[in-house]
Length: 505
Image 1: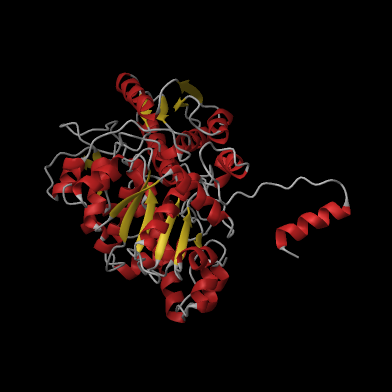
Image 2: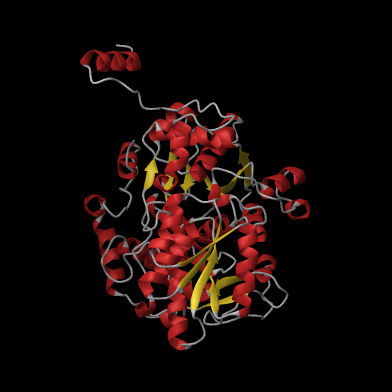
């Protein structure tokens, strides 16, 4: 495997990509003019016109129709739904942001990567003007999340897919081991502000979770000294996911239901108490998650990949990526958007079923029906009634996107096969990789298409599933890429026999 910098050097790209560990490489390759732009941008922080930047809640229906109804709410309001019961969206004043040209924004964002200057060293808060422009730096709760590696999957791409330009965005290389940190830093920071402005308005923050959301919420609340409550479906998450909120001091409620049942309960609780809802129906989280899309563009030197494949459960993340790419296009930083692929587990696939019935994205909403999600190794996306269904459909329509599914065997085999080339994937990344294998087999994605697979969590959070796979202990699964340990006696001859057998010496 090679780093992003090695790949771009080999392919003759004009400049090394930017990652937290590559600033010295970047300086070597940067032109004098480019360096001057960076210094100038840094000297102009804060931006002279930053006071004109603003964001507010508006009905998501307004975003869909591209017509502002006039209904809006301050981000300081505790509100989750529009008057008609629909979702809300964080809407930015794009005209105000457009006062600065694309060259300025590119240089400004690039200049902040990996710095220790608070809070801009965070991959999320390096884009603060595009996230929560009105938030004071003193209110930000950050662990310098983001800036995650864009991994060139050279060997897996070549050997398994015949591809030359395959990348894995390692969003699980984060504080609590999943992409949820990107959104939680934004939500908890805004809660921190509200609690200062209105001391008795929020007493705690709560969420329903399939594991990763609870870990992120509890960690960021612990850092801010804010009480947290998590609703978890009993016996349906990994031990690593369960212990994280426990360790961070959250009130952990293990409930005899699935995620959708936990979600119904948390909505009822937050409607009747001063407990703030932290699930992805709260669009504040999507503002942080969208920065991963902007990071991808930065890491490709502001070139747009052809495809981005995203595991889909509650479906907020595919909309977040869409939103990040779209802001860059609208403000002129790039001139197109990638095609998005939503990858669902076959056991929790309501969007895929609707996509197949509609034969594409044209009438997908009319074909949509919630399902009862079945047990899947990809437990974080074991959701049958996704709250962000409308958001995901909009993202797919606007990018000519695709929805595909993966069976349990397909996702586990894909994760294990990729692990053999140096990765260490969570099952959800396995879903995305399995979908990529299908799309390559059908020639939907070409051998030279620049393709990014979004890895949503660290493989160590799902070690139990890997143990079961490599022990060949999964019922009705062949586990063709299993690599169990070989038991040998304390004897040189026995050791040599095992080595010879393995490597055909």
